[in-house]
Image 1 (tube, rainbow, N blue to C red):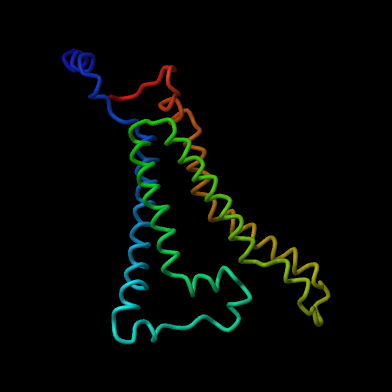
Image 2 (tube, rainbow, N blue to C red):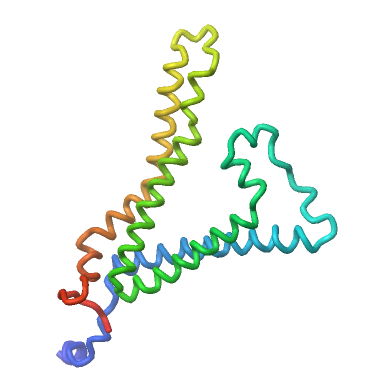
Length: 196
């Protein structure tokens, strides 16, 4: 009875729902890792490379065929810019994650958009890895299946890879849209169990 009375007198003692806490903390961990990754890239390729004798001359150079795969080649030649981009996204993610744990409706929308973006990246990455469009140019030799079969095999491999990496972001988006989370982020003027 005393605990109930205290809760009624002081609504701020209400705890953050478990699902909201899990989603928010998972998002903040990923965003924090992105910031750490960016800091490492900026330190190594912005400080060590420019202010130490010899720099990073001992590191492996881009493979000869990397220029044919522009995204792959870009990662070998623009580490510093990549670090800036990753750091910016990570800091924005931390900002959104903090406001998500404060039950801001726009923050839930931002996290959902981020989840859909990761799903799209997983699909694009899986298809890029398989590069099924190049299979038609391969010589089939004595293989009776022919290039068309290679296209199908590579496409299937890419889709399976994309599905594997998209499991977590798909579950993340589903949880954001579920009744476990969404009711706590009602728009202004609607009833929602927001803490103070």
